[in-house]
Image 1 (tube, rainbow, N blue to C red):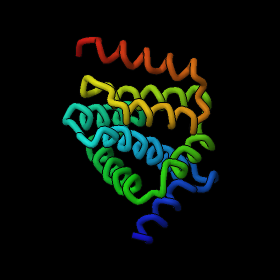
Image 2: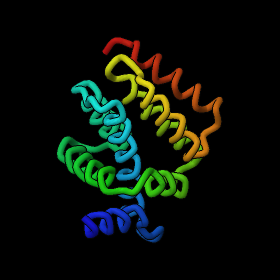
Image 3: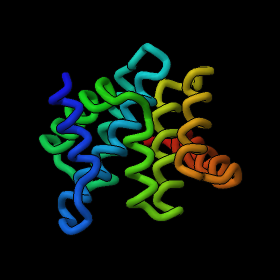
Image 4: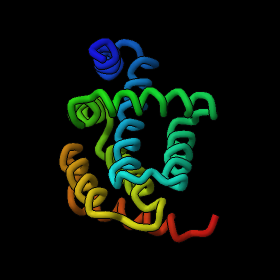
Length: 154
């Protein structure tokens, strides 16, 4: 377990010299938060999993095998991490304000995937938005965009 956590922390603290390493750690941090959102209501639905897979594929241009690997790493990381700080601090270091708002929109997409937002998901959304320093206005705008996309057919 300690080796897994150390490996995760090394990936998240990827040196800024290697753009590929930095990209991987940003992908891992984003994916870990999406996994946390998917599991927030203690009932991971197939719709939520499909939504996480679609978001990761689209956001990072990944194929199925790469999404599978990223999801496995993210699930391990989320399980082993002491909280959200390793993920949110990495995103705060590596993403612009607009990119962090996009992460919040992705999180809303996952929360909405099963058709309802439970109190745990709502609380987690607010907490993650605060940890990512996303303003309330941007938080609401991201939610509104995710709701509109969720209502769109196809």
